Amino acid sequence: MKAVAVFPAKRKVQLVEHPEPPMSSPTDVKLRMLEIGVCGTDREIVTFQYGSPPPGAEYLVIGHESLGEAVEVGSSVTRVKPGDLVVPMVRRPCSDPTCAPCRAARQDFCTTGEFTERGIRGAHGFMTELVVDDERYMNVVPATLRDFGVLTEPLTIAEKAIAEVWKVQQRLPWTRPAGTGQPPGRGQRAVVLGAGPVGLLGAMVLVNAGFETTVYSRASGPHDKSGLVRSFGAKYVAAEAYTTKQLAEQVGNIDLVYEATGASPVAFEMLEVLGTNGVFVFTGVPGRKGPVEVDTDLIMRNLVLKNQLVLGTVNADRDAYRGAIRHLATFASRWPQALGRLITSRTPLDEAPALVAGQPTGIKSVVVLE
Ligand SMILES: [Zn+2]
Ligand SMILES: [Zn+2]
Image (cartoon, rainbow, N blue to C red):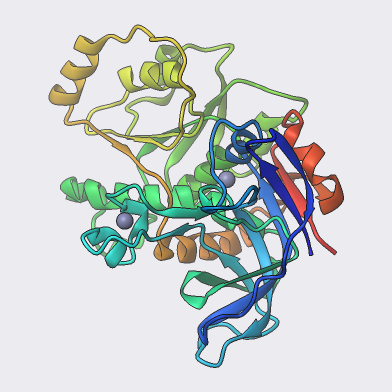
């Protein structure tokens, strides 16, 4: 079968003929892949900055954001049936018996760093025709989400983040009075840094949760991000036109920052204007560039005197996938056009090597099979 693979030693990315994966356990599910999303991680892998083939393999099949259709299920599979749309999870636990998170099925918190990630690290990915994996890593998606299911994985980043925000903000019980029936973010203000797919999906989660949400971003490309952002009820503030201080004056007390750029200078500038009792969530992974000057006295003063909290989050657990699928269904009914506009291109598999190796264009590029 066909697959898109990166050869780190040969510094190549190309279409390969890859062996069909066998069904090897009664809990295995075989998927026919339908769509595979491309993101910054894929671009880092195909420029050899990140990622590794499975042990002993010359190449890595890439692709980790995906949507497939179950075509075969093992005799002990209970949750997935042939014909179901499925989004497989990306990270697999390490084998160390002392890694408590992995043993508790929370490999997103793996402490050994020996986890594998399909399409990224030590395990083949999903940019291919057929994929087999255990049902415990499979998430069934309603058939009505055929056009948007591929956005599940990038949305899980916001899902895990917001789940942690709700937990840590239990320290502020008056912000979520029980029994009011109000959305939990009502009366609070959130800023999203960045208007790529992770930022835009995160902004949708925050608007949906009732936050007064502002997306702060540099315009890039021909896409009208400000119009798109407004269409689902958030505000857009252009980073070229307003400093972070001016942004904070417009917004008022910033209760939550959801960082989705991977650009550390603007993130730390934003941290300087985080509000009283605010939470700052980092999701981006910056490249290693030169040191940047940061006003550490100001930030430390604020952290203490304003009860602030900074948290980083990576990867996602099964609940985050479930949350993402539920949210996609909500967004598809509330903002179908905005959701549709997140996917800006669909490219056949044969042309995928050029797509992932080329400059990013638009918001989310998707590779399609069929
Ligand atoms: Zn990704
Ligand atoms: Zn582990």
